[in-house]
Image (tube, rainbow, N blue to C red; front, side, top):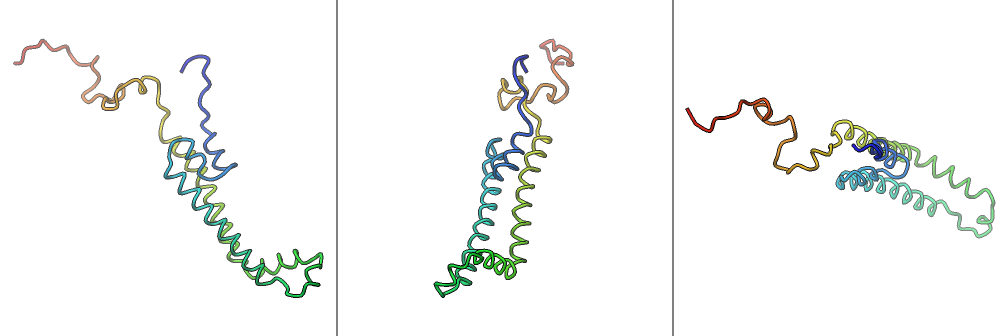
Length: 150
C-alpha cells in the first residue's frame, strides 16, 4: 500500500447493511446474489406487514361517517390491530431483525475470512498461484537445473 493511500474501510459494508438497508453492503463488495437475498427477503417481510395492517384497517374501519371524526380512532385501530395480530408482528419483527443482523455479520465474517488482495496479487495472471504458494517451494529455494537430464 502506498504511503498516502487510506486503508479501505472494513466496517463500511457492514455499516451499510446495518444502518441503511440489508444487502447494500453485499452489493458494494461485489456479491450481487447475497445482496438480492438479503434485500428481497427484507422487502418481502415489510410488504407482508404493511399488507396485513392495511387489510386489518379496512376490516376495522367504522362504517358510520360520524365515527370517522373521532380523534382517537387511529389509536383505537392501532391497538385493535396489534391485539389481533400480535404473534404475526412478533415473528415479522424477529425476521427483519435477523435479516438485518445476518447481513451485517455476513459482511464482517466474509471480510475477516477473505483477505484483502495486495498489489502483487493484482498484477499476476489469474492462472498463476500467489507468491509463496508455488508447489514444491518457491523458485528461490530450488537448486538451479543444469539443462541436462540424468
